[in-house]
Amino acid sequence: MEKNFELLLSKYADFIVRVGCNVKPQQTLIISSPLEAAPLCRLCVRSAFAAGARDVRVDWSDSAVSRARMELATEEALSDVKPSVLRSYLDYAESEGGCCVLHLLADDPESMAGLDGGKISRVSAARRRALQPWREYTMNDRIQWCIAAMPSKPWAKKIFPDLPEEEAVEKLWGLIFDVCRVSGGDPVTEWQSHLDRLTVLADKMNALDLESVHFKSSNGTDLTVGLADGAIWESAVSKNEKGVPFLPNIPTEEVFTAPHKDKVEGIVYGTKPYNYNGQLIKGFHVTFKNGRIEEYGAEENEALLGELLSTDEGARHIGEVALVPASSPINRSGALFYSTLFDENAACHIAFGASYPGTTRGGYQMTTEELEARGMNQSTLHEDVMVGAEDTCITGRTRSGSTVEIFRDGEWVL
Image (cartoon, helix red, strand yellow):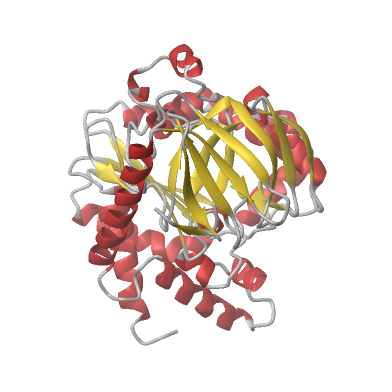
């Protein structure tokens, strides 16, 4: 490891906690962390207390145990999420000091490879349904939440198969520090400049008053995405219900909004493999009619894609469309991360499943029925898949009927 690794790691942890989660005094920080991310998790715990956290709770996981349970336990047992699990989160969210959430990832992209994809998908869906009241806290930005990552040996070897294990981990650390703007030594200042640029782009998109965007790529993508009524283009920074800013994803490069669930037409091809429940879906395409996916296929794990799309009716519609230039640092790195957190910030993407209420005007104050009336998709699922290519061109149609160029050859032209 480079000589200043410990310093960079400390800066990374502090940035995740103080800017990503933006922990406030008397809040409880809930961290979910795999054992592989323990070095980063420990630093985040100390940083949270330094920021004034009332307490820090860490929920540890282990990929080998998770795989063994999925392989050997019955589907019924794995889907039986006790009410106490839900309460263990809601009790913190409803307490006087409230809480915020940090998800640390150290992905093995194929941790569940070879297991029954249908079983994995159904168990995941059952867990999402059981924890839906808790998920609404993050989907509605009622609390601060953040996702960040550190390397694990299996993940690093997947990205750099020709390197010895330790070299692969070191190289992945270097990539993460670079794309997360830590290598320069002052991530707070660098991120503020980056976030300002994204905010300007989101403001420009909102000023266009678009009714739809059209994607065209030489790989065959020809997709028109109608936008939800009152759709708002947002950038990286979110705010909780008390106005506290936070960064849901580290890194992030996107400007995004809500499609109208019934106004998506055409075909779109995936441009990067998609990691779903520890298995990779490669070379996929989906075809939309009246907003619904009517046909799909994949070169690898097509059945798993079918399971994903069968989660519920909303999984056959999309709840997000996001614009990311091909010149993003993640894409420029030349690495395929096999992790949605990173790969979605290397390419334009769409999300199967739920819309974020905050991407329509006044959405946080609306009922489910009111959101649906605006075309906002409802689902227990929200899964981002990458569809942007180096030659992607995007045009927008305004509500006044004019056409405006937004992307040319994978880059912003606004």
